[in-house]
Length: 105
Image (tube, rainbow, N blue to C red):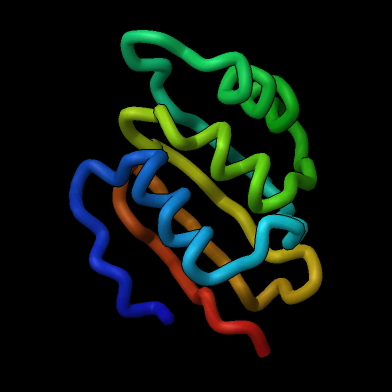
């Protein structure tokens, strides 16, 4: 599951597609840090996610995260772990894949 091909830049749609392939819509994620550019038009879902994560950890379901990320032109930083299995991690830094483990224990 960790053999995903990640192009540069990593887009929100790319992250969303990977999450949808590997996890159900109701999986609970803990996000520690999140930063994406607004692009031409920022969706209200993306703005709400930014606000929720701003300066603190938060939890969000796969479906909510994927929907918010769909139109993000690039993901600069995303540090998240599956709430039920902290070994499942997706960490993007400076727009590149830094750490990934999508396999549940």
